[in-house]
Length: 393
Ligand SMILES: *Cc1c(COP(=O)(O)O)cnc(C)c1O
Image (cartoon, rainbow, N blue to C red; front, side):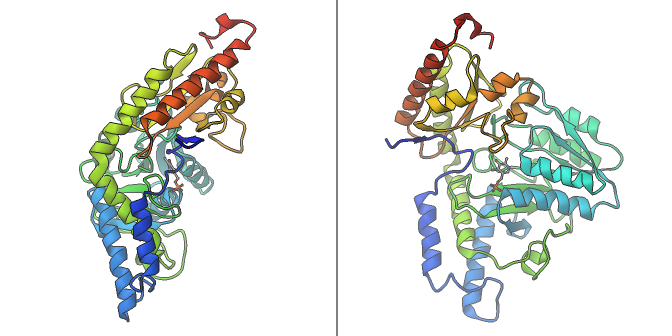
């Protein structure tokens, strides 16, 4: 076992060696380096064939077709392109959007930007478990609502939203529905047809693929076009100009195909490791689980600890690569807005730890993490003047 133990798969995952092999093959071969947008010669066409095969691999995981996939640099860009692109294109129909207060910053900051451009945004507050009810979405839809954006699985607490239920509400109201599936793709079944999804953001580096490549699914039957964010060549039908990074795309395709094949097995194994970790720490005084106890992603376990300081706890967990509520919003010192919106106190939001497991996590690592956590919290509680204060946090 190598230290630190990597339990930060929700931030990014290590590259699967099979993905690395596919990428290296592409980088090293004469069939890979041509410009995939050049169809006047064979080498361009060979690169293009690889790009199109990867498009089909990504589409297959979400029950879409290759023609509905637009390559981007990652989920941040996909979220921006979906929201700004669709809102700008549909602005003649209306100026109102609906989202939730617990979305990723890539959605929330984009909504703030749209507000400055004259759009109105409703930010729905989740219940204390982190869930947004479809009927709350329905109630928020106004006559000028053009788009609803709700994430599938939350990146901090792992809560899984009722995407199909919300999709049905949006479809009935004839409002576009965007889903940020950066965390859920490959971990939960996704079906853009059945779930009535019009736009969907995914990224490779959360699913054992390379960083810097992602995709936006655009439902062509429901939305003919969106406004591009950038201007240039005709790549991706002008919706996302720029020379395509063939090796990145090949890596993403391979990662998504592997995920599709291994999903049932991977998620069952990872969920049982997550439960093993929870069993190892749940009896520690002051520990509470954040997020819905059942409707959760297999890979994320987010807990808060009463009576300890976030920074001290992270210091005590030096041998674990985990994120804390204190650090989730990195540079800022503010406690997690996701945990705050579940009604957690500043102290509990600050002293939260997110363990996120992945395909390469072992039971030995999980047991080590549980023991380190117990020891660190015991140590910090031992330093408290009043040990009875712990349980109430
Ligand atoms: C990681 C993440 C993003 C950003 O993805 P990048 O590919 O790093 O830009 C967006 N949304 C969610 C829910 C995420 O977890």
